[in-house]
Length: 311
Image (cartoon, rainbow, N blue to C red; front, side, top):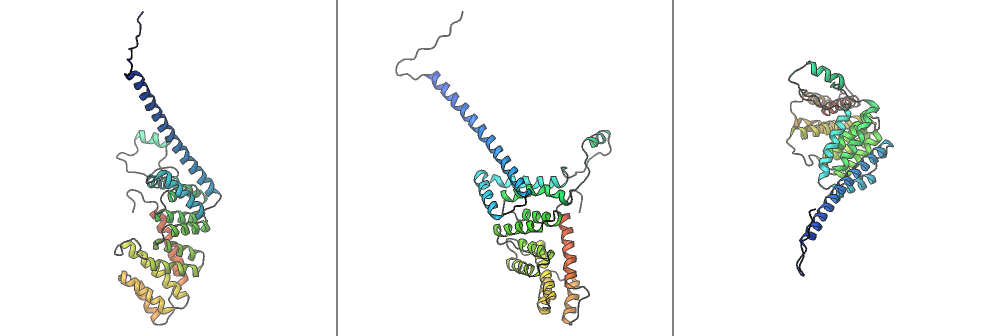
């Protein structure tokens, strides 16, 4: 039989075998600890997701809760929370499309394999509607928690809550939080004004539009089309409220401000002329802003569902 002999260790000489064994054990413990930390992080994210879903299902969107969760997310995830915010935002879009990703163009159509695959996994373009859209709200909420400086996600969340879920009260809370998180954003004030007009809260709408005009252009470049168009929206809504309150000169001033931005908008010139002549416009101010609000909703719905090849 072969015998295994252990090399003798002289006094004062380090035991090489023991040292290597100790290093190996330390490396193993480090790997185990790293794996445990990874699993704990996944579990923690799962708990946060589940908690927020339950929280939103009972309609409790409060700023204090947002402060607590956002600070926790910031401490635990650091800058990685921005990537998670984008991921949750994409999940909301996927839920809106019934769990299907956006369609892409295919090189071959109606092949035998595609037909067979279609029976298993349909690719039709579908949207959730009505109360079904509530399924996307938890993902949007997580996205705002991870990146509260992204105003677009707040605006999208408010849109779904007010237009699809029938919860303008929660939409107002979302916009209030967005205002606190992004105090220099005129876009939040524009959206608040629209929401208040839909609720026939004229005084609140007036204050929101005034605030939006005071904050414009915020962090945007004032010479871009989007920024100019947003200011024109603020001005037209403000002009119509002036009209409704029989403040014709103030309304004319706002309308002329729109012409300074877009001289080609001839319908504005016609309305200015009518008001300057002391006549009543053919369309009352309330009717005009009602039509504008409907058009805004349609535009937002289209903007939130753009697919390759669609305009």
